[in-house]
Amino acid sequence: MTEILIGDFVIVLFIFLRIIAMLATAPIFSSAAFPVPARIFLSLITSYMVFLTIDKNAIAIDVNLISIALNGAREVLVGMLLGYMITFIFHGISFAGSLIGYDIGLMMAEVMNPMQETNNNVVGEVIYYTAMMIFLLINGHHHIISAVVASFKVIPLAKFAVTLPVMQVIIKYSFAVFTIAIKIASPVMVSFFLIHLAEGIIARVIPNIQVFFITQPAKIGIGFAFLAALAPIYVFAIKNLLQNYESNLSEIIKALGS
Image (tube, rainbow, N blue to C red; front, side, top):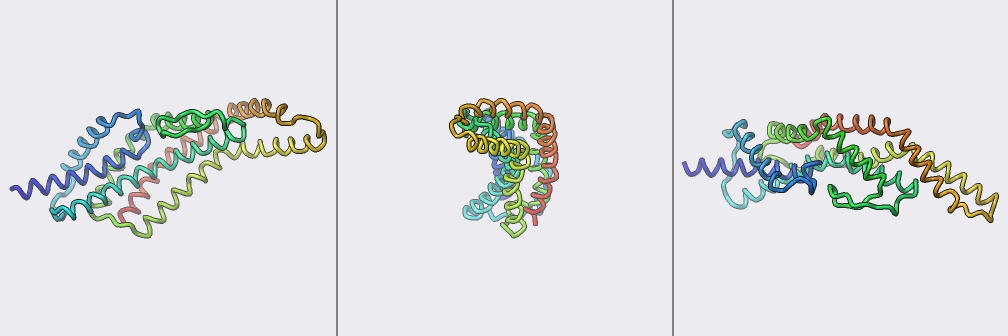
């Protein structure tokens, strides 16, 4: 009887480690605005519910200190990978805002992002929080919990190993940060490339003119006008990116379980 209770406790512990690791790295739940006790309580409740649904007889775990430590580290790694793969989308959106702010000339106007605990320019923060609101509106936080619960059917407890498909999916979604950033920022970057080209021509034609002091206020105004005109397109593009992440999560879970 004692061995059964210890085995069940170890299984619940591994489930809890995977869930808490994912919530600690996933969007919304990893925010400093989300209380740590609430994160732990949600992980405990979800762990108990998962424990009641999985086939415990199919799980063979050695109840010794070294085995528990190694398998616990595996579950933490699985949870962190699942959480970070979703976060890459928001890093790409935030990076796109940084590129736009740099071109407009607002790179010096930085503010603190309490959710990522980093500094970013004002444009980047506006785009980041817009993406976060869209994420909540499409119930993205529900999909996070559903994904980590579904992962136990594909990735058995204490069976995860870093394989070639895992490395490929990590590289793929890491590279997506730059792809997303360039796609979102490209309309403004191309437009301001032409403006910078015009600045260079004016500086060569009229050497005595102070191009920077004349064009800098105009660039800020033009930048805000571009952002206002592109706002519906940005909202549509960000919504599509976030809606596709549910299928991306399925791909990630299958790769981790292979």
